[in-house]
Structures are given as structure tokens and as C-alpha cells.
Image (spheres, rainbow, N blue to C red):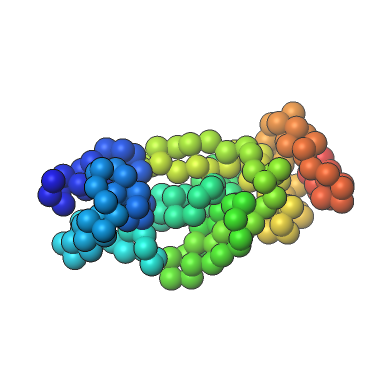
Length: 187
């Protein structure tokens, strides 16, 4: 199997970001051989190294952000922009994850940790030779308020145009002070 066939197979899978182990599983070869293929793919310009141990076959920032750290989904202001609820394009792609918070400044990607009990309300979207998980508009707004990532007046303005039943359902899954804050800000 040559590197062009590997690239085509990887793209056909729908996945754009790979580790050497994931690529080894895809081509059914040992990791040591896949590591050599990874180096050759990057050297030939068929893939780009995005962080240590991971390559991408896509240039799309959203696809890279959605697949670089798993599990994760694009949320907060980035998802609000995706749903065209805000006009300003965010500088960084912001994602929610159940893993630790991390910032990839060179890539313009930020992951915010949320509790596993709040990891819901996202959909898979096909995008740029891959896929990306993006929060539904209501969940993106709830996440933004929960982590103080949006001003109160903007949150209230956006909430007025959303599905209130779905918004109330998402808020109902929160416990304690977080729930009270969400109710005050959004309902």
C-alpha cells in the first residue's frame, strides 16, 4: 500500500485527524510501520502534523478541533457562530470536553472541561472531507452561560430566538447554583 492509497483510505473513512495507532488500525499494519507512513505523508505534503503524535488530512480548523481531542464537540461562541446566532467570528475554536482543559494556541483551539453529566446536546455534521460534532444552538448557549463565556445581555438576546422547550430541558439537567444562574439569565 502506498501513501496515496493510505491518504485516500483515511479520507474515505470520514475521519481527518489520526494518531499513528489509529492509522495502523486503518491499514491493518503494526504501529511501527504506520509511524513511518505518517512521516512520509507529512514529508510529501499529503498530511500536516498538527501536534505531537497527530496528523491531519484536512486544513479545516473546525474539523481539526472536533477530532483532535476526543470526546469533544464545538460549543460556546464558536457553535453560536456556526448556527449564525452571532455575527462576530471567534478568534479561537472553542470546544467542550470531558477531559482536562487545554489550549492549543498555535492552532487557535481551546478545550474547556465540563462534567460528563453535562456532555450532551450536540450533532454530527459533515464538513470538509470529514465530520465535526457541534453543539445545538440551545446547548451552546447553556454551555456559554455555565462557563461565563458570554455577557448576560447577549445571552438573553440570543435565547429569545431559540426553542424554549429545548432550552428549559437542557437547563433542567443542571444541578445546584449553575441551574439557578441559567434560569435567571435565560428564562
